[in-house]
Length: 294
Image (cartoon, rainbow, N blue to C red; front, side):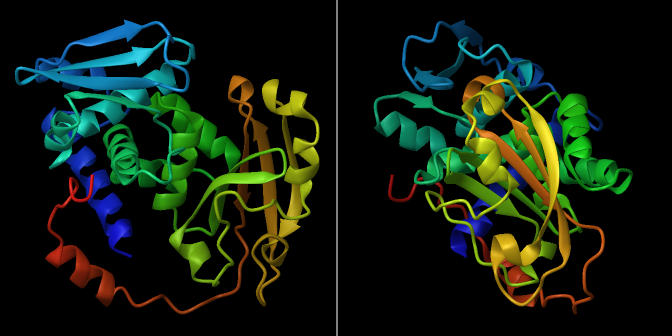
C-alpha cells in the first residue's frame, strides 16, 4: 500500500508543476516546462537498445535526451515528462548523482520492478493529464477506447498513458491490460472495478481465454494497429461471484508489438462506497522517500 501512495504523490507533483507553469487546459507542453527551468532537450539516435530517453546532471545543470527510434510525438512528450520527473521528484536527482550523474530510462509503465521509474512514469501522467482535466473529459464521453484515443490526441501523449490515466480517474469499472502473445505485461484497474474484488492480473501471468488471447495469436494484428471488439464478463477475466457484461475493446500498438485491451461497463451491480478514511490518513501523514533503497 505504501507504494500506491508514493505513486499518487508523484502524480500530484506532476500536476503541481503543470499548474505552476501556467497550464490549465490541454495540451500541456513538457518542452515549455523544461525551458522555464533552463533544461536543454536533445534528440539522440537510438544507439542504446531499449532506452527511450535519459537525464544527465553535470555541475548542477540537467540535460534531457530522448531516442528517435519511435516516431510518435505523444510517446516523445511522455518520455520528456518522465525525465522531468527525475528532475523534480524529491530524492531523484540525488539518487542519480550517486549513480554517476547519468540515468537512462524506458518510459511507459513497463519497468514494474523499478520504483524510481514507476514514480517518474506517474509524475509524467500527472503532468500531461491533470486529474481535473481528465475527469472533465471522461465525464463527457462514454467509457471505452474511443474516449481514450481522444484523450491521447488532445493531451498529446501516448495511448497507453491515456488509457492508464483514464482508469486512475474514472468512476466507472474499467481495466487496462497491455499484453504480448499469451502473457500480460501489466494491468491497471479503476477504483470502481476494485470494489468488485477482482483477481489481480499480475505481470507475466497468462491471459485468460478471451478475444484478446485470440487476437494475439496473429502477431501482425498487433504490429499493424488492428482494432476490434467483443463482449466478455467480469468473471471471465477476474473470477469471483460477479458476472456482469463488459465490452472488450482491443487495439494493436503497432511497432511496440504489444496489444492494448480496454474492459469497461456502464451497467453494473450497485455496491456500497468503500471506506476512504484509511487512505486519507495515509496521505496526510505521507513524507517523501523517493531515494530510499536506490
